Length: 252
Length: 349
Image: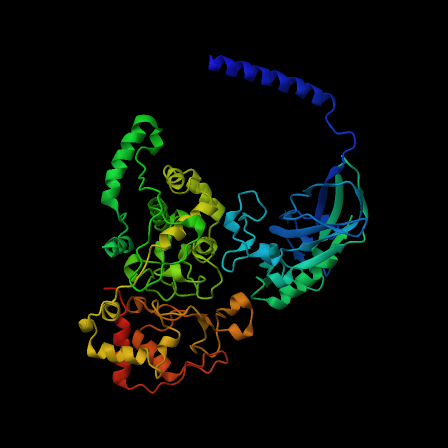
């Protein structure tokens, strides 16, 4: 008896769901959506070229190099609303790679924004979290190849590796592996686009195009002689690179 | 009583409660063979209730992360992983390759061998009593045992592998997935892998030497006259060893430059902090079992305890960061021998 009743209730429920489902199909969106998805469209470049692993590029001075790994962290993204107040996208961390351009920031309120800003790297709290506690797929989980220093427990904010021609005349083969692994709390850098206004229309996905150019990152770096920093073992080079980050980002 | 089972755990690669486990295992085997999948039928299940660690007398109970309280299944899983070369790229090196049970969890070498006959740049430290370490390695670069697990896996000079690829191997292994679920109710992951090995390491202690017999068990005959003279020197203001090598674990866990070199190839603690005032500073190691953990210093550059005492007696090299506690001691030949004899009395019986 009880069972029959349960079935009847379930059947009714199923019917009602089906009906409301049909109604929703006729009107899938609220009349005036008040939010929209915001996306960073990140282009990782060497000069005018998109980064592709294995391709040979030239530095500004004509020295050849290639890239086998390029990863960098963006975090602490803050939108500046029209009244000047800040809307932090709390917890949003991007691990950018040349193989991916679109990075969703989630739904944000529709409206006019004066601009935005973010951190190249991670804040110190996030930087010293235990990476093993994040599920696979999270930008802060242990990656392959890794962007976390297992021996000093901090994240590598920017990792670029490949081969470079170190001949004096810059006319030889790619003969040396270079490593630019830059991290540590002191090297996070503020990237400021707080006066680059944009408008988000409700229900319409909005894309912010950003370029990050390795030639700007290495603007005053001589790859022949300055080709290795794991940060702590070569602080001057790490600092030089970190100081170049703000001028390496431009809006498309 | 408890101490005995602890000892067995430390010294034997066979599960320490094998016999009890056999009984429980039989029952579980029966249960599984009645209704469960074939794969699980011979997996040992030692139980997953929290257990209390067997801590040497006079030692505090270590602080343990809330998410990694010890259970028998966790400890056994970690122990199996510790001895399994599956962690290294070419499956030739396990944790135990550089931390031998019979060498007080060191390897007796100046530098350890990684895969492809690579050599490390520092001397293998003991894992015994590591539950008390406030940070890991000679330079303290990693905050706890769990995160420490990643470093040898990823080091190019050691296992030269990738934690995610270790996990991929574990996931397709015929036995590990069940063992992980029995221990953590989770599949193999970087999280559970690091937890399990740390959980095993927290069961490894040294704390029953002839010195302990003398000091904590009031057996006055446990130390010879020479060893007692050495002990007086050790804890006295003349040799001053105890300032850094004090308390139950014979270390204060600080970082010190002890004047081994005028110029350090390995910057030590400065590798982590980048501070020039940290150059040449290394973790003060525990002296328990020191008679079995030769060679000595961060780079294994001093072969014998006699030479270690000679080093401290000389006052060391005048490095600007050298601890002011390291000064010429003017010890007699007999006093040096007494100190060495006392240090040898710190080995587990």
